[in-house]
Amino acid sequence: MSDNESITPANSSAIIDTICLNIYQTILEIQEKRPELLKEKYRHVLWNAPRHQASFLEKLRIGLNQTKKQPTLLSNVQKFLHILLTPEYFESPSFGKLMQKISASIQHLVEDNNFASTVPSTALEDSATIVQGIAILLLDAENLQLDSKTEKFLAEVCSYPLQIKIAFANWRTMGKKDVELHRRGYELIHVPAGKDSADVKMATVGSSIFVHYPTAREVFVCSSDKVLTHLCNTLQTHGLTVYSVCKQGDKIRVLNNNNGHSQTHSLIPKPEIPSLEEFIRQLQEIITNQQKIQQNHWVKLSKLSQLYKKKYNLSLSEVVGGHFSGKRARDIFLEYPTQFVTHQPLEQSEIYITVFNQPPSDETAVVEHSAQPTEVTVKDTTSFKIKSKADLELSIVEIVKSLTAQSPGSYIDISRVGSAFKQQHGQTIKETIRRLELKTKYVNLLESCSALKIQQQGKVHTVAIVDSTIDNEQWIITSP
Image (cartoon, rainbow, N blue to C red):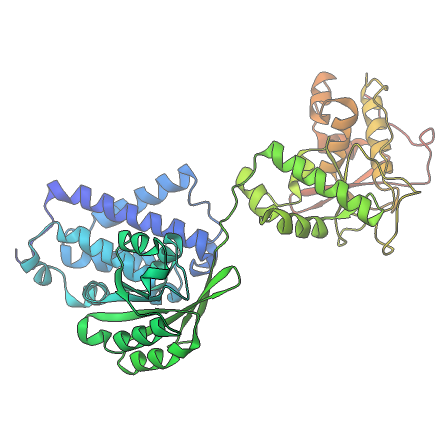
């Protein structure tokens, strides 16, 4: 096939689809594991949403389908990646692996002996290098245990495919560990019993590894014993990238001896995201326990987040994000007004949480500082039947006054007013407006009430009492 020969129409569509899918999967992995590699404007795009997926793949497919010649296909892929990703990405192992996949896809179009002349060397320089090199793992099995998940993590750290794995130990004392490692593709080297026997043998074999495997480019030296530092230095002097792998507590630490860059891998599996019902129960339990400890019904959101993380090894943001895309941790408490009460004394102060079925009282509240709330009790008006606009305004004003009792005249988010209203009356303000056929919107209703004043900050509306000293009988209700 000549340099000018085009991709055949029969193969072109399938090849382009494969390349597009590889690029899309790479973007998803980067956003999940290393979002800082995405340019700022693309970091918060919901790439896994169906509409974004369809749009991304379609635009990429159209762009690459304009490439009629094989020599320019890889170059165009790299140009597209430069639009989305920072320069640091192109020095990462992920980039090399992606280019390797794409090169493999292109190779299906031609015979191996023609491929080098089909794609220019400038476009394939990085990926060709990766294909020619390998990574090697040396394991002191007496000193360090690696499970398959940790091994997969190490494979993602290196830039070259991890193809050779060698484990050293006195296998007579290792139970069935040799059977497991052999099943996972390790070469097993037996050493006699004795202190540091595995380390010594590993240093001996490792120091000449580049002779037995001339395509080796990277080596993992896996042992928590520092006597292998000399081996690491020897391998580096022969131009290999050396990673020291050791166990620190419940983590595996990987140190790139060439540049000092360190990465960690947790040996504790990440727990599953609980269901919403279970999550609410967990939060209620933590709040109730903390109330008993601190003798105060109000619990800081920051403290609650800390306690939840410690107990369940998950952050509130991770759980909330798993159920409500784009929501913040604090939003879960507004989503469930029948279970929780929130209070923020001042706009810039901390948020406090309590469970709704245990309203705070003056007797049990302990003030930590002047901004902490001691009591916020929404007046119970469930027996009050709303039959008119005036009744609705009266109920809303009472709620606002109750929620701002600790800081009269302060503004609160109208969503909090709506949550308290629904708790009292069993329906939302919007539903009540429709039932009364008022032909107005929630915000407009608040603006029309002379006892209230409204502010807007971005998309958020806040409300306050015009004069908190005026009694209900004195303020004027605008009736229809």
